[in-house]
Image 1: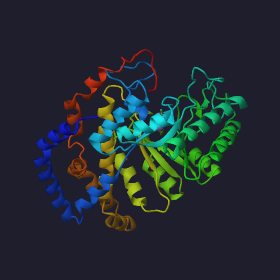
Image 2: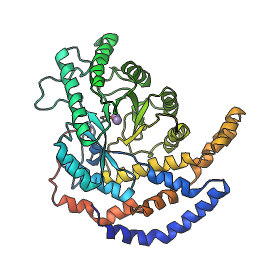
Image 3: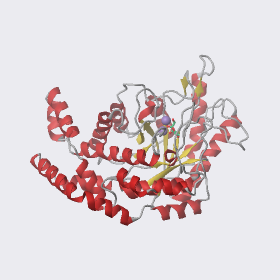
Length: 424
Ligand code: LRH
Ligand code: MN
Ligand code: MN
């Protein structure tokens, strides 16, 4: 972890300017009838989970360029997640991917206590073969034509639930790469039926206070057809399975220009929005840093979430899911968590009564301006003050860089190989 003295000293340098900016923003919001302290309190309570796999340098299928001090195992990854939370105060949970992060529950719990973290959704992996595995997922997993392969994939998911229960997780996220690469290769209906049958067996093991989150993705690794390819199929799955099955929306898993915020609204309306994997993209599942390409879209998603807040049973899981190819993952994850918080704060200050009035009166221009007014507001002083008041860093990236954390862990962590490609 970073020494608290280091954070306090960095904050002391920035505090006066922050107070001036915060007071000025407070005055501005007050003129708009908004209480800055109330917004800050909501921002301060907000958390987005870190994907364990995001702490390592990502890669494409062409190459991976790891930096010094890469985490070598889940305990290193949790150390990094602990630092991210310490500096941002915005990431209290980590999401595990099994078997990448498999470890005895007692050890995971001990590390969680040490790093001041809890566990978010468990993620199963039936899109890769593991060295000691009996059957290959080359032609699919939960939807495979061979019952033995499907059974192996089901059992892996059951194992993830079992481990998750021991460490206090409350959800299982299932994403499969199943699909086909050639027209005619797979029978669409029979393949989907096999998926549904398998998913029902997984759902049957979901504890009463858990949720099963299924994640859709338009394409990749299957390039002609994908079994769970869009929110429509995902909605059908969640509906077939039952109340505790909901849809997970990974922002990068849609075709370019798709209206994701509207998908979010549809799923909210039917009680099936289970959670998010936040990231950004230009072309496909790019896994770029959240808010780096289209921050307005992120704001519009949060606009729907804030609009729906308070609806009975509405509690989507919030997680990042991105791949860092050219940055220090800790820096990217910190700034992405802050981008998510920013979108939330901006959505909180939308004048919702005015917006409804403009919508009902068909005043398209003023409806749009109402959203833009909130989006154009620089809410950074609110985010920074929320961090400062909880002992986190006013300037997380600068404080992290000055701490020397990466160089320090590089002394004990093994050098990571860049050989081969890989998704994480
Ligand atoms: C698939 C995905 C899914 C996986 C993660 C590694 O593209 O978004 O969430 O679990 O990447
Ligand atoms: Mn994802
Ligand atoms: Mn993805």
